[in-house]
Image (tube, rainbow, N blue to C red; front, side, top):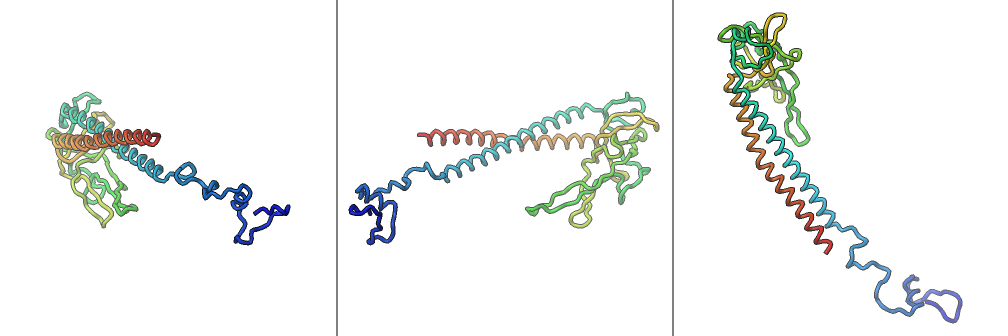
Amino acid sequence: MLDDTSDDWSRDDSSDHWSLRDFIDDWTGDTSTTDDWTRDTSTTDWTRDDSAESMLDGLAKAFLLFFFLLAIGIILSVLSRHLSRQAVDMDNTPVIGGAVLQVSPLGRTVFVEGVISSSNRTVYRDWVAYIGEEGEIDDEGDTIWSVTEKATPPLLLSTNSGLVQIESPDGGNGYSLQNLGGWSWEGKYRRYRGLKVNNQVVALGEIQSGSQGRYLDAKVVARGTRNEYVAEQRNTARFMSLISIPLFVIGLLGLAGTLIWSVYRFLYSNN
């Protein structure tokens, strides 16, 4: 406290320590118990509002989740419509044999149905064309499969009206192998499947001419018949469509709900 009889400042012996608050109280004569030097804990001006930050973080995550679901729904819907249009086009694509291929216009898109001739050379085991995959375990313990081997050489098909040469538009790796059936395993993380001699197959492509005569520039070679292949495309399109509808609805309603809730919280917090 301040000693009025002296020009010096002195410490009050009755106190354990000197404090700035004691000095102000003694100087001003203020004995109130209100702490002017501390922040009023009823306000939140100087502290971070953890609940508000947590709410904003939750809204952001919800927005991203529903946006992702909406985007997946849209993508699946677009792919479904694309496959459906392809199936319609395939219904109008003729199935021809070797004799008709020799007199058809070049560049015409056709199906060729037949069996794989015994003249074809095997490229691995007893397959004349095949794909191989290897599996790796990811951080979550799931097996991720990726194509590590692929062989799609020229093939000779025996049709009801002669032989047809099937070639690849990309140096032996261009046509897609589909509907190959079950896998043949080598160990736990390596698997193969492909086409064998005498398998019934259907090829889709364009008629072209080369040094050895006419051939089918194939985009797809699949086991089975044209009708089975088209039916598979339709089933895939139908499945994608069924999955896309709930994803689209959930994503759209979720986004709308998130936005409405965000606006409500913003208006409520300002009142």
